[in-house]
Amino acid sequence: MNLSHHIIAHLPFLAAVYRARSFTRAAEEMHVSQAAVSYQIRQLEQKIGVCLVVRQSGSRIHLTHAGQNLVDEYLVGEQRLQATLDNLSGESLSGRLKVTAPVDFGSLVMPAAIAELERLAPELQIELHVSDDLIDLVAQQFDVAVRSPATGVGLTHHLLTTSKKQVVAGKEYLQRRGLPATLADLKHHRLLTRANGKAASWGQLLKQNDLNLDAMPERMRLGNTFALAEGVRNNLGVAILPSFAAGKDIAEGKVVELFPSYSAPLLTEFYLSYPPSTPIRKRLAALAQAIRTVMVSERFSDGFIEADGLLND
Image 1 (cartoon, rainbow, N blue to C red):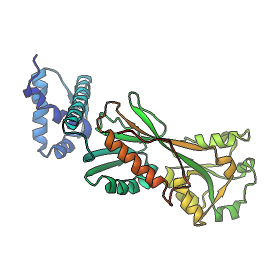
Image 2 (tube, helix red, strand yellow; image 1 turned 120 degrees about the horizontal axis):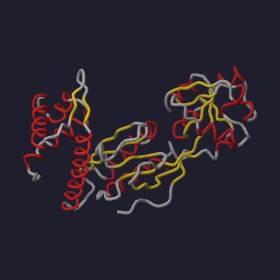
Image 3 (cartoon, rainbow, N blue to C red; image 1 turned 135 degrees about the vertical axis):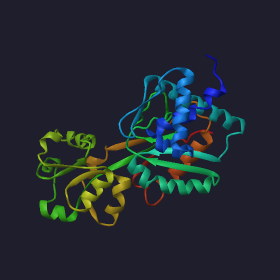
């Protein structure tokens, strides 16, 4: 079977169905009717003689193994074609940069960084997605991710910054439960952890005093960084927060920092992660510069340890 434009023309519709997991939403993305999307998929399946999409009850769909393989190859080819076009046009600080970042970093740091980037590169358009899920950059068509830790096989990871962490509690909570003098005293306090049960920072902190999280009888699971911060403000317990999320409340006297000497080793590294063959290094360098400008600003300067070196153009 020869590859022809008659087959290639259907592939964007298959990719849209894959991204949306729905014919209705795929139709909205492609700005056509749902019937048109269904027609394109049927035509593609008939031409190659393979079932690509399984329609389940309701509006749910999933791709067959063949459909997934075809979509994966198409998305890689699409990204390579875009890279070639960028190279032909002479990659510049214009166009679009699609970024994904963790919820806390993406919500607190990235908007200020985007504002700074508008000053550095006014013709560059940023599309920001915030999620604590591990996003497949190629499949979801993202240019770059801010990640902690550096994860993702086949990606280049460039250290962007290191964030400090702080142990904090509300004033009313401490008045009610008492000020812990040692880490061992935390056995008499409620520790706030993330809803997913991950408590690596608590484990690292307690290990310094030969303690472990299992020895702490009272714990409360909350959602993410924002829920933990709100839990502290509402005097629910003691939490470990990134300094870029807790520093302002500490400075304003809304919450109290505990054990600063013990929390000093609690560090989180943030990376820029991107496909190694990306042709948009000028844009990535501008993004890194904008983020670092924000990190040394008055608001965040105490919360980050700046990494050496910027991305090269």
